[in-house]
Image (cartoon, helix red, strand yellow):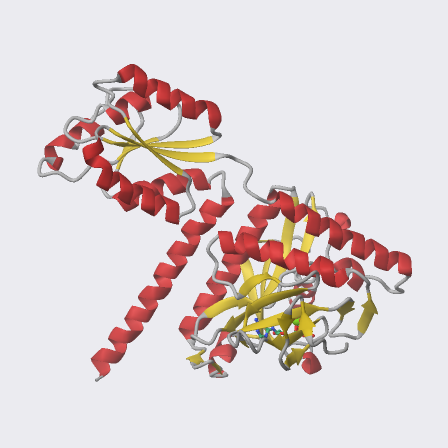
Length: 426
Ligand SMILES: Nc1ncnc2c1ncn2[C@@H]1O[C@H](COP(=O)(O)OP(=O)(O)OP(=O)(O)O)[C@@H](O)[C@H]1O
Ligand SMILES: [Mg+2]
């Protein structure tokens, strides 16, 4: 493929690498970024089988962008920046970790050959994670994590040790689970998928390369016969123009379906405060909730002094939202949470504001009349987290944000642990 000088007004620098399906160029005006140009080319079997397919580059480009937008919304750290043209996108320039990170929900394909005796369709819980060293000449051999660690890869100053491998494995499984939940909204089963990581110029490990119909097996209605991924092409003994058309139609269908993978429930978290004096506490809850991707309203109303008004506001929310959580913030005797809870079937979380008398006042939230099921937490973060866990049952993006938060927390603890370990050695 000829080297273009410019794409959609972006001046291109030198070719960093050219693979089977993409060219990667430097961007002299943005030295920390690069542009990836997709080719109208489909290949399989380490490139042994290869065909031109007009229009594939544009379909792949859009598929990849839509998938990365979903993952970005979920909080995954990715290299993807934006679409540059119909067939190209801009990414953070990475030193690529030469490992293919594969996740499988069901056993099929090469797994069955490498693991004789395991029946096709065997379900992995949690998903099975495998790693392969990127080496076309040797057909991408499977590598153990000990082999990856022992290779002592160093990319942009980041040594790929056990912590880095653990992190990439966890992100790999999470990316799979997010996309599995997303595809479930269209009744499609994500069977397995492959991703790659890169290290940016600051030493951050990012999900990089692309995710498109080359990257996964996708079975509508969980039925292998309905597969819409590259396996259709891999399975072809003799490739006709009509076959290539079918493959392309499948890829285009997948690209279009991605527009319908947004969570389909309109959620809302409503923070009711008994008095504007509690605003600071409520703002902390709202901030933590928004960071988890929640849509938050704050309202002032008193169940003691304006009961009818309180119930009326609550009913308005019940009328317009499919997934709803109420958070009640009331000092002294908390009538607000229990009154809301006694009059709705949506969850109510009490989160009383800090006070010298909290130990006495908390009992008004805890010792509720029979028939009421509200919960009580005292930290703003806890209220936000619990609301997110409830909304996350119906909204995979919120569910994913919680998982990313847990994963990043574990990763930062590993960094802190490493520092302390090194300290005690001095
Ligand atoms: N953000 C990035 N920065 C730098 N290089 C990248 C980035 N994203 C992907 N690459 C690299 O671009 C190269 C070209 O992509 P392509 O997919 O065409 O290669 P390929 O022929 O499929 O071979 P491979 O088996 O290596 O994927 C790959 O080696 C990939 O690792
Ligand atoms: Mg590739």
